[in-house]
Amino acid sequence: MTFDLFSQMSDNSRMSTERISNHQWQKLYAFLQGHPRAYAGQEEKCRRFIEAVRWILRTGAQWRELPDSYGKWNSVFKRFARWEENGVWADMFKHFAQDPDMAAVIPDSTVVRAHLYAAGGSKEGAVSKNSG
Image (tube, rainbow, N blue to C red; front, side, top):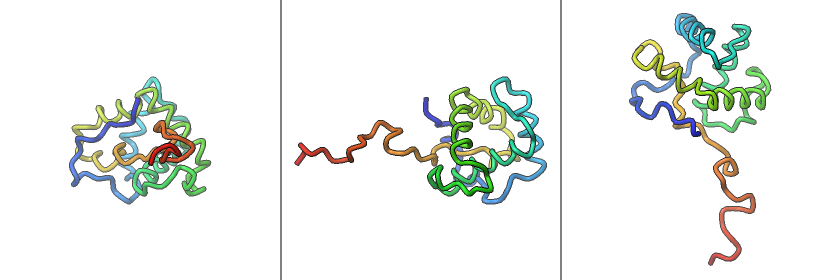
């Protein structure tokens, strides 16, 4: 399954470079607490996770480049992937799609960059030795 949820969003609703407002966070956290497949846990840690995902999406950086202030990159990535697998991101988009206050909060998956190997690319390199 790919993380392709928000391709319908217009350019003027791109994700803000600022932190999620407290008002937006309360809406988002309430949704996550009620979601059967999303572990919201401690509020501050959950907010830090969401902010980490937003940072990755906003910058286009590799997961390994996630600043330490957001937590361990691999833990953040695993939780991100688990939420994708469980449909949490898709459900979040559906839930907030008609809420203009949340347009800048919902991550746009079209900018999530997977490593070449994650997309089925060859570990040997992009060019075959037999091609010419």
